[in-house]
Image 1 (cartoon, one colour):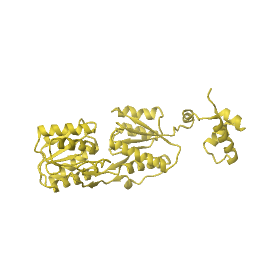
Image 2 (cartoon, rainbow, N blue to C red):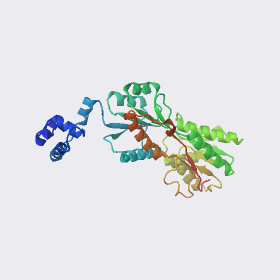
Image 3 (cartoon, rainbow, N blue to C red):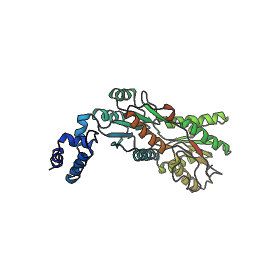
Length: 332
């Protein structure tokens, strides 16, 4: 039989209300009384019923992190930053991950209707105006990372700037026939759209023509997709000698491996630059040029910003935009 708050109260010699106040660290309870309650809790191995508590006070003690999936480098680095935020600021909140599997509207609305979280951090998903209004009227803080969202707090990464600078690096290496690798092959998200726009703008500003058939798309951001993309490039456009892999370093590394198997010399025959500065990019052979984004810092800031919103504090919008850094290595 499970231990109840009444069992703790009897052992501590106090009322069950006092036990509840002690658990919530109420200043109205003396240190001596709290000590008795904590001792009884430990002796009985009592665990508060947080589901029941949420029914009473309307709070879940949970912050939801929502993404299409959590297996790519972008999501993992954001999560690392959120964990850093958790360690830096001790609270009673826990983190719960929700993978939407493309059912964005259903997942986000269920979090509200089923009282699954007190706030939401949304990764690379653009919520509809209907969802944004639902969160606004429900007074559930919503932070959106790397996507657009009406009436929500947006933390933006300057993907246009990163892509523009990456393309300039390829141009300055003396290459003239460009290929572009994008993620989200069915519908470009904001980050991939902005990277494509930055790439095209850099070529235009340097009076370089671009063949739209030299755009190649992947869907899952896997290493193996890079290998497949290179083989496709060789069939369709074997004269490409510079690649901007906007789909990220992991895909770019797959391209590099397959290119080396085809006896392509990097960067002499083929220059390539990735995106994200994945941890292995510096130690591949040749090392991969890339665009570094402060993803873990974004994750940490997102968590700390959510805490501020939960406390009804204002956020400084100037602190919610992040610039990338181009890292030149041996592949360019």
